[in-house]
Length: 297
Image 1: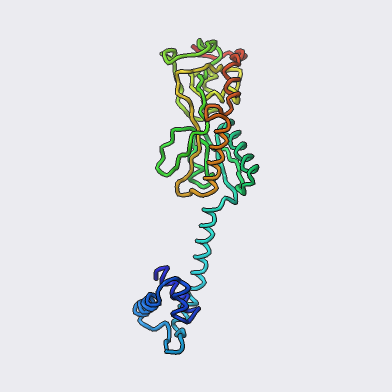
Image 2 (image 1 turned 90 degrees about the vertical axis):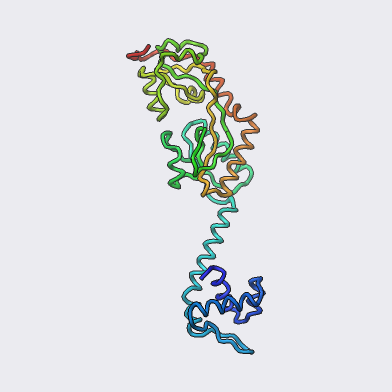
């Protein structure tokens, strides 16, 4: 039985009147009659007794009503709840982040939503840098602020929210550590470490295993005595934004993204989000080499 056939049968079983059933369901009386005849042909027995004065369920009709009626009600209630969840902004929204500046941005958006009396309740979750999409796919996070570009067929990509200048992380005893800035040509012969866990990568840089380009926010939030951060203006900016599972799109996600975009606009755009942090990163001198590293150029 199709959903509409079930609905017509159960409504007629309640109304026991073809015209009233048609009026209630906004269909023609002929449609109701044809549907019941089709069901009776399928089951091979009458579901209703019809006379010129009354309509009544047969014993088979009553049994069918009792069997499928409660289940159909639960299905309709479930559909209604899902629809309300998709259209409404009330309820929790689990937002993932992997960097401190991204976390600060999420907290700022949370405050903006509260100031606007939004019923969306933002809950923060730190996601692993090496697997930023895993929490989205497992359902642990509804949305995540990750580094772009993102090209995943099951994910929707939102606007750029942070556009960060890039710096080169080098050991403090490295030949480039005291430069005001470096260019692409300065990396000739250098071991550029591949991207991975930020903490592991910085540990390897500090140990003299190589160099690594990082967003300038790293120089503020991840300072350590074994690493110097040198401005790297030749590198394209590091961009971050919101992504979420396309299949899980809902009003809460859209409300958060809209609030985040509005907040970024008030900051002057993605490149100005925490602009003071980047200014601090570029102006601060490299740390003193308190720890001597081995194997550093």
